[in-house]
Image: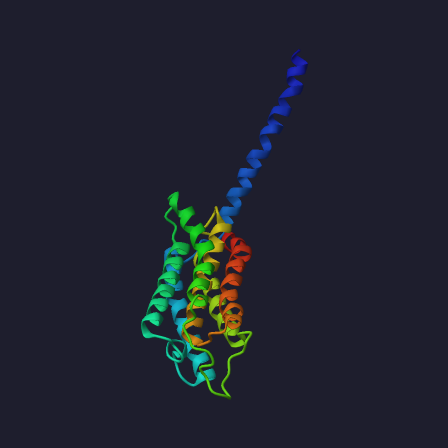
Length: 237
């Protein structure tokens, strides 16, 4: 019997060895990962400055190159000023609310619901504002200035604004979201899409449904998907 007990003792020690080695590797990994010199809160504040500035700059350059004037989407072919102000106000509120929800880290149970709403509602709400009763009259420009039915210029502007916004969000929350990173990524993508959509609303006076759907609504959807698929890994590494 003594021989049997002696034979079992090494096995007991061997079964306890892997957790100890695992904990040791985890500690070494944590110690080997350099801490960020800038806090998450500060990075988020920087993103909140960078994104509006880049959006305004890209919008100003694109407007000058294409139309040689600013704010064409808010002026040319608008059916009424109240309609324009209401739509613009709704888009501004949608963009800011989604941004602060996506960047927030309250830790409360309601945060999941807020992220889910932000991720799922931005594209439908934006589509409703822009596609139901379009703001602009048909063919607001005389030749040779025309609007592409595919919204090519709008796609370029949306890509620039959305990419900068999504990248800024990812940098701001890097290594700060250990769980639910997929839902967070979707909300961040939706927020980036909201910024792109707001820029397009100010930039473009199109009223054709094909142009509005392909050039305005689809970039918002695409950015939401990009955030869902590409941002979670960036948040964890």
